[in-house]
Image (spheres, rainbow, N blue to C red):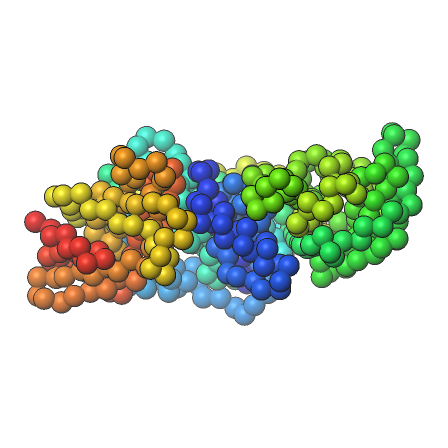
Length: 459
């Protein structure tokens, strides 16, 4: 059966300062052995600033039927879902859309992926499967939502049932009208490995090297071997300074390793060099001057800017490998567009400006204002969404900690409901926070909503 391997990578927006800060902290935590939870599982996803989904297949027990799996995931949301049908097929892989649920901010699309050949969807198959939503006349990747989840797998039919949750990028007054599911490749036998090394952990000896027929300097193999990954297919063969004065890493790969990116090299190295006159300033970008040279049994990666003179300014060397052990990428064209219909919504706007300050543990962690002004609250039978913008006289973009906001909803019968935090997105100079009710409600029975002590009545 499939197993979720969610990599909700950053969308095509300016990165959330908190995510950037969290990533920096996580990289530094490698040095101390203290790992903090990260919203994104790989730093490569942050560097790419790309929205993509990863689909991983593992052999588990027999799964329920398609509609059982969908019903189980919908739960009490089931009455608000609509059946939408669409399918496409290429390279022996068939994708078929089954149902959709469009709420205040998040659209859930339920669909199946079936391997008609029986030999493509293996234990490590991934895909660049992507869900985009049409709002205000154009498709957008959107942001937020829980990404891709695998609900069940039928091993006899080689068929998986999945749900893709994606938030809309525009404000709630531009609801999605269509959803588009598309992919350009599937990668069976997909493997990834990563390794972070501090300056103190590097092998910085001067190693033996040779110059190739093309004029490239490369290290000789097996001078400082080191494991990389867990499957034994890749490793570090030699690592240190070569005769050209630059730092080199020679990687070794097994015969079953196939590249999945252009250029053929499955290895990547990221490194930052700090300004010696401002050592506390985090470099904005990694040094991008890597030279890759194919060698017998692998690749030699040269880091020209990392020399014995600049070594003291290195904080962290980040090595990654991305490859297939089952033949590489399967290129194709999978695309389905289906209509979606947002359920009835009720919206309230504050009569006077309401501004909330970003705090973390009761303090402003960045020492500057990231205030957010409430534009509107949107209420559906299933959720509440608060839309915010940056106050006009504020230079810094708005930003709140959605998990620290308190929200209650008062009903006509006097009941006070506390929906649970679901997700939030902050991009450019706007953002939203969404909460979900434990049980569906009638929005017409809502009297008011209270956000951080500020009550907003609904007429």
